[in-house]
Image 1 (cartoon, one colour):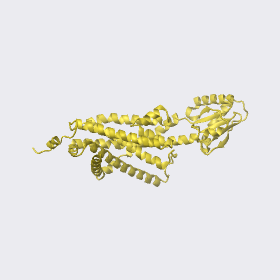
Image 2: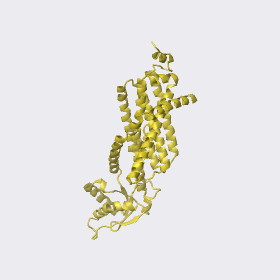
Image 3: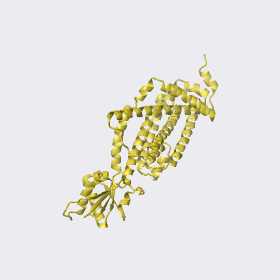
Image 4: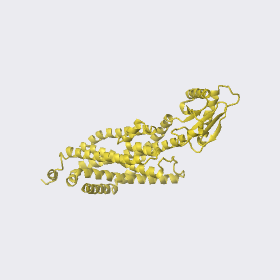
Length: 398
């Protein structure tokens, strides 16, 4: 094991120095400009979809006749004005309506509409009251059906924070983290494949295979590319920070995650590393099966599209914590980094992340072993080890 790690370190140092000190690395740093623009556009579209799917909801705590009238009025207004302009109402029974917004409640209510249709009251945060007071007054007026002479006016009571606003804020942080993670992974992981194909074409990989185990070559290449990717991300983050400060708008305010910002950022780096290593080890296996650039492009396309599908699976399950589809997304290795990063934004538990990182690392090692076996069989034409005599014969003078 020590010999394997030492050989991997030699390969990683060789590849890292060759990439970092090359002229092409500068142009690599300029590469994300266009994908970043596409990512911003996709993020705005995804935000609109999220707003359409995750409708704002209020708890409705009234007597049964008033509650039924309010629900019917809500459905009628939603049909006329659109679902996004009228909040959903969920009929509840509670002696203390304000407790429905407490941190201990597993709900996503933005507020509570209580009292009666004649004397309605709205409980929520100041921001949610300001946003939804008008639509809810219209809803109450519709539910009265002309039975009151004066127009409906909501008596409001503000609370510090509701569970609904906190949960929605954490959902925003989870979605932003997932989008950034998949963008960086898809942008950077392809370099592993191109590097392997280049060395296969130049017959360099056979020379390396004569000196060190194939597993060490693959492991070293993966971690060299990961280190290069982290340096690129650090440069891009620094440039983005400078641009934001020069613009004078300050940093964009995202709601704080459940684990806190320091731990969430640390987990983000760890899950990026795992997502990169998983996709990179898969690309190494593809490179082992391909003999030409055309074959590489043909084989890598399904893997890339598959990774996008896994991201969509994790993104779809972000609002369904604990449900079967979310558990599948968290357990499946290629969607696990995205799903677990969303969990870090919504749940403070730390042990689950240690287990997930260990599970993902085991899959990285398994894929590396599988890719190395494919490489021996398809490139070196060897079922066991490297045939040194054959490699030496390729470069012997005639």
